[in-house]
Amino acid sequence: MKKPLFILLSLLILISACTRVNNIKSDSVDTIEIVNDNHSYANIDEIKTTHLNLELDVNFENKTIYGVARHEMSDHNCDTAIFDIKGLEIKKVTLGATKEKETNYVIGKNDELLGQPLKIAIEPKTKYINIYYQTTSETEALDWLSPELTAGKKHPFMYTQGQAILTRSWIPLQDSPMNRITYSADVTVPPSLLAVMSASNETIKNNEGKYHFEMKQKIPAYLIALAVGDMVYNSLSEKCGVYSEPELSNACKNEFSDIPRMLSVAEKLYGAYRWEQFDIVILPYSFPFGGMENPRLTFANPTLIAGDKSLVSVIAHELAHSWSGNLVTNATWDDFWLNEGFTVYFENRIMEDVFGKDVANILAITEFQELEVALNDIENGNHPEDSQLKLSLTGRNPDEGMTDIAYVKGAFFLRTIEKQVGRKKFDEFLKNYFDKHAFETITTEAFLSYIENELFKPNNITFNTKQWIYEPGIPDNCIKITSERLNEMSLLADRINNGESIFEGKNKNLQRGDKITQEWQTFIRELSPNITSEQMMEIDEQLKFSKEGNPAIQSDWFQLAVKVGNKSVRPYMSDYLIKIGRRWYIESIYIALKESKDPNDLIWAREVFKKAEANYHYVSKSTIKKLLD
Ligand code: BES
Ligand code: ZN
Image 1 (tube, rainbow, N blue to C red):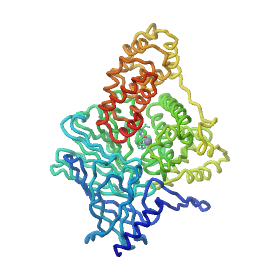
Image 2: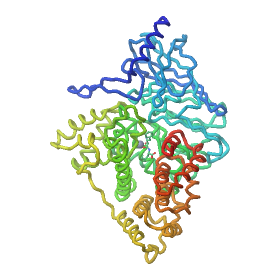
Image 3: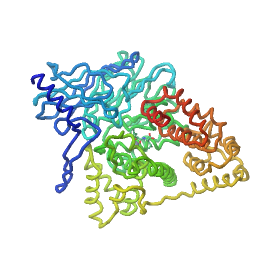
Image 4: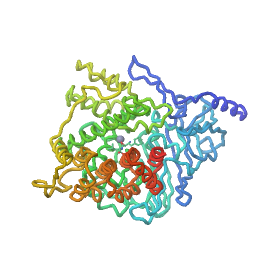
């Protein structure tokens, strides 16, 4: 192609409104949908990556990845391929597998949210596009940690977080969940460190610091992930194991010993596990999530190592994503509930099987409490329509969809259906759903037509699916779950609210270990903000929430302390906020401080954040910064 013409063409494309991903999918004979992913610039309706080969050099001194992304493309008939990039430095672009030839490219205007379109001149016969690039300090996916922020304190650590639209900030690619690719990678790291990816992994370091990876199943771009650190592997079973810093080996082996059982329960419920291996890697405390379902290798937060397996449901959750999310993927971020709602439902089924109905109900109710808080915030916020399951996030960060609506309203929707049709039929339906749509993406609308045809019609059932999905709030037919054990915790809290001391009589020796985490969470959540600081201290003395509570309990406890106006827990609270980067835990504390009646609390929050922010990943840092600004 002649260069000037291409530049002119590119300019025209640039000037015209961004054409985003636009695909036609036919789900059944009588429905054809046009689906747009408004969070990607890629022209995947014309040309798609089918396989990606990465050559990555991970340089800790410069906190930079030097890379080549070699894209193998689908058959096409176009002269431009558009990729997503954000905060990347593009060095050159070539075409061809063996004899590479440089080609022209244009980088479009930067959008604060989406980054830039990288428009590459190609020919209809182009099969291979090679993008030479490096990451910059603007890279949002990468977290580079100095040794002090690791468990061993001797070696640096780095990891990536791709979901939702951050992969484009460390790899130039078509960053839409609507396209699935296989990938391979050759990664060079300092020889003292081990590199692991969401792919086939080595279990021990080698002297060259060179690792080869293969992901043979097709995955969406947000699931490409890399972690590099001083890690060892501990096997839990033939298919399961944990990568962690050596200092955490024993704690991990103990905490996660139920994982192999969870895997077999999951397979029994919804069919074969299609990813061969299910390992987890424990990252440093900055990791902004409890867990991230990167295929073959779940990324996990060290806060999960509670010592008593009380937070292991997060692993059940990430494991469940191996079906809901990784096997059947939300087509766009507006359909996020298809990933998370199904996963929370499935997670609870695994927990029920492994730990019993009682515990599963307690977990579900605890989540419902969180849903009620979230719903209230959403109804009083700028986007009350966010309480619908189907979202409209065009022009907004898909992260804004990461609320308990997708997770918990989504799960309760499925539970309500389960109750109406019966578990046996519903399980059969879900198993077929995963099987029929395996390695595909799906929209809410395609799901609706599928469930109508496969479950409701054959069973003569009418169900208010449209209300659940397209209307705000929680429909009246939502099932109610109750738990005697949680009712007892509420009564205990009531007694404190009424000024009684509870640590008398049969409760004289009540210890934290007598109840599970979620029971204590209900207890704390039911305590009134009108109790006194002294009452809080009395509880703390006996139950040691501030000092020794696990991070889930501490998060609730510190929020209450802010509401009560108790300042004596502040040293523990600031240690907590400086150490832990898991967004849901810390965000709610910062919100409480911001909303506090005492204006000094916001000042205090800003001071703590100043000390803490270097320890947070971009995802948490940007959320908290926005909140406090
Ligand atoms: N996939 C999510 C994390 C995520 C969602 C990252 C959206 C970026 C954008 C993961 O599976 C998740 O839901 N983690 C939860 C687990 C919990 C619900 C059990 C978390 O981190 O708290
Ligand atoms: Zn999830």
